[in-house]
Length: 274
Image (cartoon, rainbow, N blue to C red; front, top):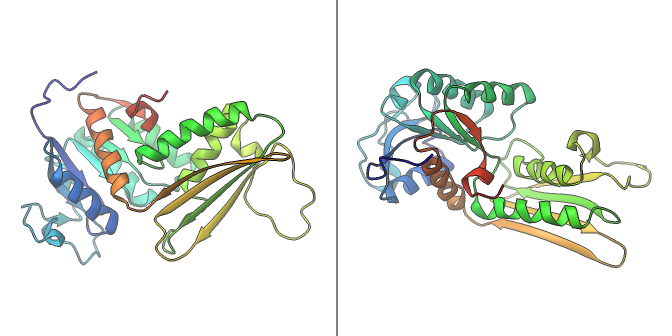
């Protein structure tokens, strides 16, 4: 389905507008000729409440940051949400009531919470991905190909590193990498993932997909998948140096949703990588 009103701007609300990722998203929306910022949300206790959403840029957007979800979404076509699972689900409830589509980059959802999102997608269109970066999603496709070709004789380990403030581990991107690899091997990640190693663990199971998490400093996001064989190893790595890549990928997701009324999509759909 294509957008039949391509000459009109995409009207976007941003959640977490007072934070670093929110700032990146607002800056990207304001810089895009085909996008318009119409709403900005943050938590009630945020010091940004009441400020102009573009104040950090030294400009006036005319859009105040609010904790009133209904008010923040009333003029929007799409909400971009990179917050926390509980906040995203609360926002999604109002999106569903108002017919506002959603781009969700939040990670750390439980299986039950993911089912709530799938239910909402029966009424609105949602792009949900643990990483909105175009480069990361191309990397996922490369991993799918590599896993299929290296299906035996190679041990698979996923190593991820993020800043000290990240609250979930492994990262959503690392888990998505594991899911893609496991799927290419005909496995379920829950049956072969190994998240902790300590003490006498015994030999490595050949079907295992191992995860290691590093937290420190201001690392935006590094992910490496190691395919270790006998006599060689292959490493596929993606490193993010700026959250701007997530913002630009989010705007591609917004454009993909134009004209869509319902359904749950991911960045493979957006980038035509399926």
